[in-house]
Image (cartoon, rainbow, N blue to C red; front, side):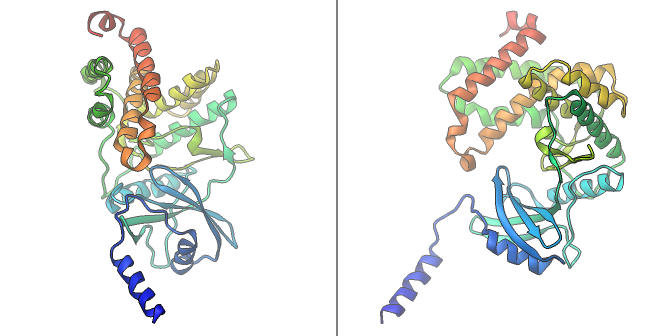
Length: 341
């Protein structure tokens, strides 16, 4: 009698599940799915990290792989296909990237039904080696060379799928909309940010002559591994899309600025220019995109507050970013700083 009551209670609880924003898929269940879908013999699966998506480390009897579980409603299947098309294209051009693997049914992407909705899954090759260093000019030079190789190899990239461009709407306008509610309690700082981003947008006409094409979108040492033979493998193209190539370079300038190590930024630029011509216009635009990248990053936190938690939008974060924006304006817009800001 008691067991029947328990069965009814369990069934009722299952049918009335509380709404979920983001679940963590079971590594054990994913292991079983991989065993069924791929011509592999998986042995372990563990959650590696959570971020914009969930990343799992998978081992098999033959080697290691990375399993990415995209967040529900973060990327459409078509947007993911664009990323996968790009990776296959770059690999075909000899660029070392973490490539997607095909299932037994010749699919690159598959989906599972999670409590919060459909989640897409892709299995990637493993980027062997360790994170590339940003303390060595030799490594900085290598990073520059691989950035140029990606840009050159993707010059003729085409896909039947699409991604929104990494344009001023992506870098400045949409982030500002997301940021505004979190600065409402600091009206003077919000007014400054409104004016600052307005001045950045006003420079849009100056960008017309810049190199435009495929961008990694999150290019930096954290997404590059170096093998013992000094070869580099680039991964995590989740933020890729068509944009100004100087934006990818600006993300490295951000790293260089944070490390405050002389010579590394110059070594990176020398490495890039040794593979791909770099115009004076593009070099001069890099500081602009460095500032825009900070706006976009702050907006990314604001846009994902419901998933990552409100602690990420702290006054400490705003103090740090506003300090950067004011210092940048003082260096690159001194006249505007005195007049408008």
